[in-house]
Image (cartoon, rainbow, N blue to C red; front, top):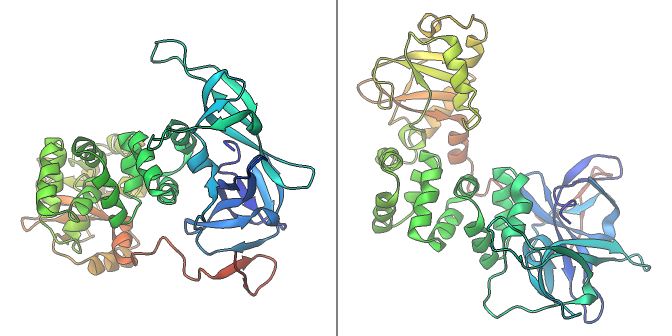
Amino acid sequence: MARLAGCTVFDPAGDRLGKVRDVVVIYRKEDPPRVVGLVVEIPGRRHVFVSIGRVTSIATGQVITTGLINVRRFQQRGGEVRVMAELLGRKVYLKDGSGQAVIEDVAIERNRLGEWDIGQLFLRRPKTSASPFAKGPTTFAGWVDVREQQTPGEAQSAEQLVATYSELKPADLANTLLDLPGDRLIEVAEELSDDRLADALEEMPEEEQVHILEQLGDERAADILDAMEPDDAADLLGQLPEGRLEQLLELMEPEEAEDVRALLQYGPDTAGGLMTPEPIVLSADATVAEALALIRRHELHPALAASVFITLPPYETPTGRLLGTVHFQRMLRYPPHERLGAIIDDTLDPVPTSASAAEVARMLASYNLVSLPVIDKAHRLVGAVSVDDVLDYLLPDDWRSHPGEEEVADTSAATPVRRVR
């Protein structure tokens, strides 16, 4: 399963339909659990169910289906168990009396009747060394060779599941987390690093962000907010009661809290409320080489890396008076030693903090830009608003989902077919 997760799903013509995110099984009394289908992520980050009967081939790196996919959002039914989300990390006891182990991976295989079942389990026994870097020995076992035994209320280990999610992009991780059962979601969230969880929260609807944050302790919640982009952290805190908001701001790092407090003073539908207070700011004497070195940083958002802003000192927001913008593409046309002050684009008007989201969107669209400088009444640069910030605000709350949940995508015919799972 660890190799299958993330594999591309194709139709018979070779067109890409989505990616495998999980395998759904049902338990049986004597026999190993039977595979009933796959959870597949299709465009729009929607997780849908694909019956195993519509899968014609499972191989390393790819899954081939008949081409019919029910695009109704996947909802787990009673009796169904998701291998990646629920089975990995469970404790089992080996029937030979050799003790307990944790399921780290699961193999599925076809039986003689053509059905897919859970075959071998890859298990890790408890470590025998006191070293924090040591790991227990591993072993293989069949499903019939183990029994599940879990103390009521005992949380399952989420370490293996977090490791499986390590390669997911933040948007995919967010969508995958939201599809987990409630208790499992919080367990995995607690296991994720601060930076990783912060990235995922930034891709979630605000009500889901609030729900997860409320389940974390105050200290951890503050650490997560520190790791988030200031504008996203401000949006999240703006959904909390005033008392809780102030409590978390007090626990945050002073510099991060200061940025967030500055953003909270603006309306959420204004340029001030949408902007990030951390654009790239340089002096007119800085060179093209210096600017390119700054925008090359891997942690910098692509929209913010598209341009640098030239101001009078100081060069931390709120800066001195804004002189203009130098776009990345323009920098590439000049030698590294060229001063930025000589290639400023001063024809682009900045937007005031009070500008509406619709006004900002019109300017971005009119001039084919990905970001705009935001200034205060004294013409000082206070931040930059990017196209993704505006889109997040202007799109409907359910933009992450596609309409038409009842339709079935049929890649072999022009007319959608209606089916029910």
